[in-house]
Image 1 (tube, rainbow, N blue to C red):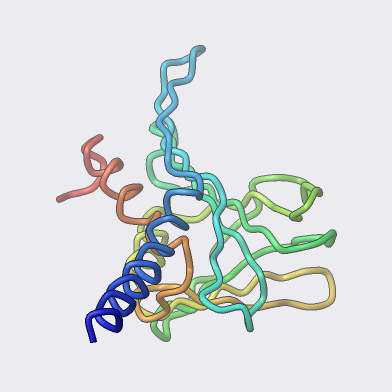
Image 2 (cartoon, rainbow, N blue to C red; image 1 turned 45 degrees about the vertical axis):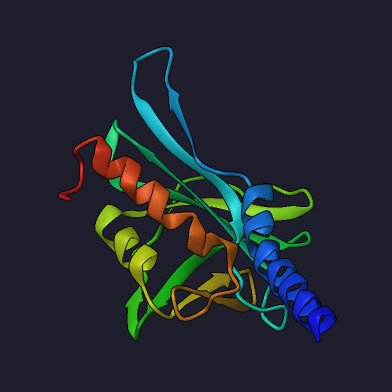
Length: 175
């Protein structure tokens, strides 16, 4: 009986430890100051934005710059080599499609990524959404992944709160 209890405790610790290890092994936000003009940037490198292995394998990174306080730059990525044309979000049934291109071309590598820009207010809705679907558009197709508080498997879920908190600390958002 004692062995079963010990095995149960070890199994529980192993399962709960995987999510914290996964979070610690993914890149976390950084604060950078531009040496030319002194502006501050809060940067979250791209991490997984898919809550399940059965979904499209997307990444999402984001950057806020004090020089452009009303917008957030997002880096949207898909697995493989393909042209990323844009993105849209379905946040708890509300569509956010006013996302503009911030780079002329897709960057290619292990991931194909494109830099886009969206209003800060819309980014906050995405970050605080319960059920968020991210649609990544390519030339002749699209793919969808999900995250948000009701989709617990996406690494990006744990990256939103510290990012938003840093923006609040810079007195851009009301607490």
